[in-house]
Length: 374
Image (cartoon, rainbow, N blue to C red; front, top):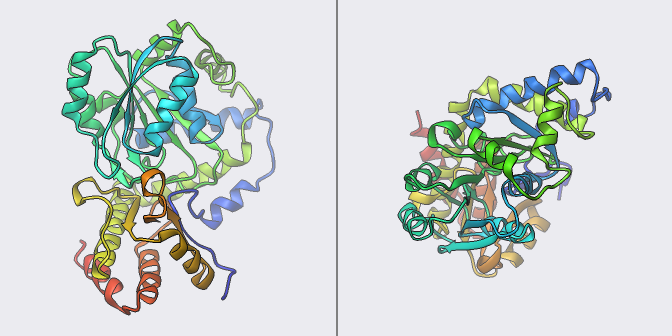
């Protein structure tokens, strides 16, 4: 098979536009010099509409998990009572990070193929007024579920708890309104909907979250918000950043801004709807009901999914993702985020058609969805 064109259809890292990769090879600059001091605040301002906030955006060299740990490190001390909403691999990760920092962890678990019920969150908080922070996942890419964060935020009522959200696999592909919804901390990363290589996390804290961080009894050095703020006063990062990735994200934002956020959101919804129509036309069943379906990744039930994925990769050169947790070996996942188009979805569905000897079934169904989209 021809192997020089990669077909990467996983929920991150996602394919990266050539012009973004080219920018990543730009010459180095002094991260404490005038060029970088101009670029850093510009990048932060350009990210604010994607977060839906007027708050500061902090850049952290590290994966999305580094951004998650920054949130925990600044808000959690030994004994801090927290509530983690666990309905997937990344909800579990919140709980694991919180335990490392000594939190008193409460878990509200829900089935891995459904969204969290905001009413249950509200009920739990009323029974536990001591909870100080709620940790949630916007787009649970391990289960392909999109949670209603706005409803979760509202469910707190007048409870004291801060709301911290992992939006690593959603920001840039799904609308988010940090300030309007009353979310206190939002975490995302460079390698998903932002269409850049992995290695940068971005985190924003509300004023209420910053107050709690300032009073936090424990400290992390690398993730200490006070250190970031001190350096930010002179538009510098506290530690040597990934300069190449900042250049890449700048170019990726050029592409996203040229498309427009609303158009990007519509594109992700269209790709989701095309994929779901296509797999159903093949007699396959999506893991998640329509009302909870992620716009950035789709899970499909299939016995022996891992063996099937291996065969697909060997024969066609297309990389689909496997299942995690209780779905390991039982589903495959099709990523449709970031640098992906409806035409790419037709390519992925054509591979499914050939695999299941049903030529034209999936692509015809997907094309019908696309043709009816205004």
